[in-house]
Image 1 (tube, rainbow, N blue to C red):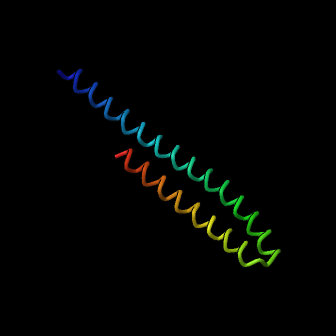
Image 2: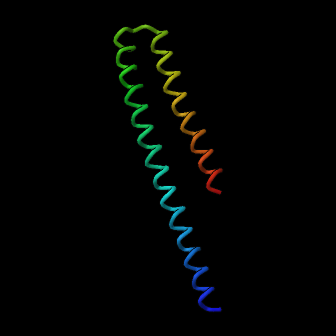
Image 3: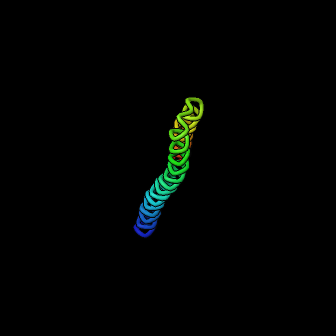
Length: 83
């Protein structure tokens, strides 16, 4: 009846609200992780540049690129999990 349809609509609305909150949380977590990772890489970069050691600078750049790749992979997993 009408009550059942209203209940079903309420569940649908609640489901989409939960999805929206989950996505916001996931973005916040990713942003926080990224900020932490960037902080570490920036410190490493400063030390590497001071030393002017090409190998150290290269290593820090590798770490930096890996952080981005890891974030992309995690974002992909989350998007797949949510659909």
